[in-house]
Image (cartoon, rainbow, N blue to C red; front, top):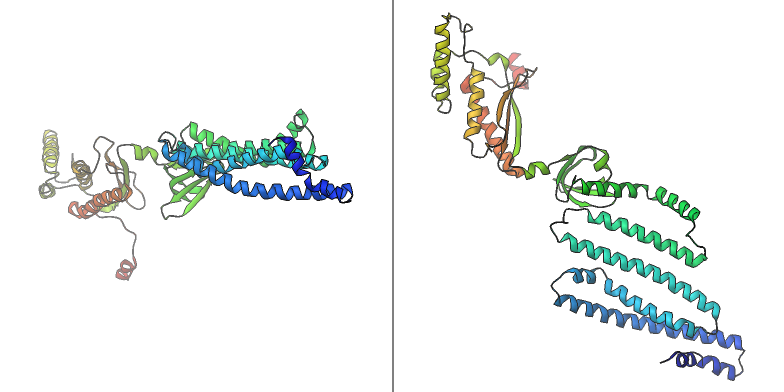
Length: 420
């Protein structure tokens, strides 16, 4: 059907009314009104048909291909937008023909069609961006990257261009001039200040590999302690251990200090660092009888025998008077206990011996002398790690009385009652 045939068909009512004696203006108005009803009714019917046909065609095509990119295109409504684009092309072709007797109406409808075209282009662009994001997230290389941030930035840019274009279509005023662009840029910077900061932060986070999706982070300022589930332009979403969610401004990952446990997760062990406070008055030198008694502890028997020989040899060589234990060289119950704790860790199969291992004596405090256990467990899973740590300290706390040591504790209600 050519343009002349469509034009003749669109003027049937107008010609009939004029032949019946109606004024030409009223005949044109009623003819235009009827054409509008016919066109938009036809467009609605075609929209339903086209959308169903194109969507089904896309779905059938995507089912036959191995790639999942076209599957995500269907999920992001790309076929629907294509159907709208085809209908818009039909309307674009028909408008000058249908409204040939009304140039003003033709101009208005063409502007509306152009505005819709701009909006449709933005939606198609958004659909392609979302499809690309979902497709890339399937790849292990991009799974922990803040793809959502990049998509949001590009969408802001697309909507900005679209809005400028629509303003130009509606007002006829060109926005290309330097002054206009400068003013618009200032407004954009003011409105989207947080968004721009978030964009810069998300790029730095990605480039510097500061945080990935799936990292365990602790951010005390915002009460976040859990796994990162989402990184977008404005916020970082953290699922805490109690299954609550905390949102953190993306820029805070650059501006503030937080703790990322990824290094621990990627290493060969998880650190155990905890102290036992020994009551200072319970520390004493070991007598010969004490040494003999402690030799019954198999884990330290070789050490005590070797060490006591060195001590006796030194004291005999220097003719030390051992009537008092303080004279010469002596072993202490705390020193032997420290060696026992060290030997216990080295015998524990759950401790990684290739990483740093130490039992150290910290500076005395008002709560006693801290004996710190510093080592790394092989199993980094939280529950198992806590069990390993608890087993070690359960054993050490139970072993302390065998060395005639006491653990420091603040007085309880029963202690005060006993004194009374």
